[in-house]
Amino acid sequence: MPPRHDGQSFIVMANRLPVDRCRDSWHTAPGGLVSALAPIVKAESGAWIGWPGTCDETIEPFSADGMHLFPIPLSCAEHRQYYEGFSNSVLWPLYHDLIVAPQYRRDWWRTYEAVNARFAQAAIETAAYGATIWIHDYQLQLVPRMIRSQRRDVRIGFFNHIPFPPVGLVGQLPWREAVLDGLLGADVIGFQRESDVRNFRDASQRFLGIDPDRVSNVIDAYPISVDVDAIREAAESDSVARLSRQIRHDLGSPEVLMLGIDRLDYTKGIPQRLRAFEELLEDGVLAPETTMLTQVAVPSREGIGAYQDLRDEVERLVGRINGRFGTLERGVVQYFHQSYSFEATIASYLAADVLLVTSLRDGMNLVAKEFVTARQERGGALVLSEFAGAADELDRAVIVNPHDISGLKNGIREAAKLTGDDAHDQMAAMAGTVEDHDVHQWAQSFLNDLQNPVNAGLPFLKISTGNTTTNLQEVKHVGR
Ligand code: G6P
Image 1 (spheres, rainbow, N blue to C red):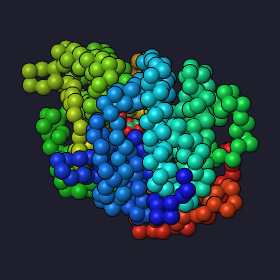
Image 2: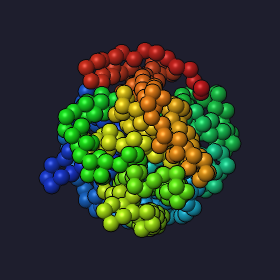
Image 3: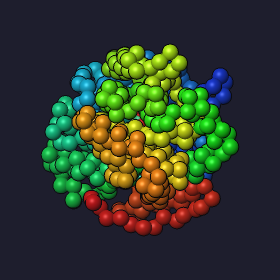
């Protein structure tokens, strides 16, 4: 296919489009990735290729909020096999340490290939000569090679938002060679943690016989972050301050308010957290009269059995804890199975004293970074799993192993007591770390590497975010 001269010069590809439909209009969707990339796509008059979120519906390309959007249709059967099946019942559990068992179904794999080919074809047809194409996450791992095989002229980046598993686990995947080769079609392959980079390099060596020090791809860690300015602006606003006071007051002004906010996903360690909390009440270490836990569980992937089982388990545990320790006036765990708006989320961070992040495995965990950013000078404590990517940077948190219930209890007890100058200093230090590495800096650093070709002769692109336009010149070394 000859490159189009009137095509798109900057393209983002992700499983989902960055917009939600509300009746007849489209609105920018909430979330970290969208807040990082939408300004760049807008500034470049760029495009976003993704699934619009419905089945059996073909939607023509359209523009919204200054972005050209190219919807990729999925039939209901493809939604079951590509999205619920291969992406979220094979890759998701395999890449998160087999918390549930993957089902290696060949029909799901074939549909994953077919849907990846559809995404790739849309980019091949849409990209201008020398375009920059940035592909996101595990749902689209075959797309880089598929584009590269037909378009030598474009720059291709891939960023994996979830962990990349150790070689022993990757080895289980019957299609491991195809997945690794698919990723290696990208010029820059980005991961969250250094350990993910090592795992990918080991797997390429073992299963493809590639020496990762001798490839021309850049393979590196780019830890994703949050929109610090947006969080601070909300945290400073009167309406959010009012809402946070209201939340605490409506809960009966407990002495210690703990908080968990997660997608309802088995990777997040919500049952472990509830069990530790229950034992601390049982042991008399936490007093039910003065301590409360608010758990927000955002509905997610509700068509998948493992997610339905998790919901049953969490709701059973919440019921048991409230049955044992609640009173007629109030439960000791407040549980919400619903989404929270951005403002309500920030208000909850301000209302709480302790955030519990107990992931069994997590690419990054942006809730932890949002919490420290919102609290900044306000003290409080973060309990953070060592298995979340955020633990690499937020090492002043109370770091826990959520599989070790006694250790987790100690961590929660320590956090509940953390007050005064210590709490203040630790929170401020962590907020400073996030401020120095926010989501805009993340995007810039990835695009810097992507747009400074190691192979001479490929075109450069100017990237602008917000008010600044940067000519990206720094050249990185290969295969670090
Ligand atoms: C994780 C994944 C994303 C995904 C999000 C929500 O953060 O890394 O790729 O979009 O979960 O999951 P969903 O299946 O609803 O898109």
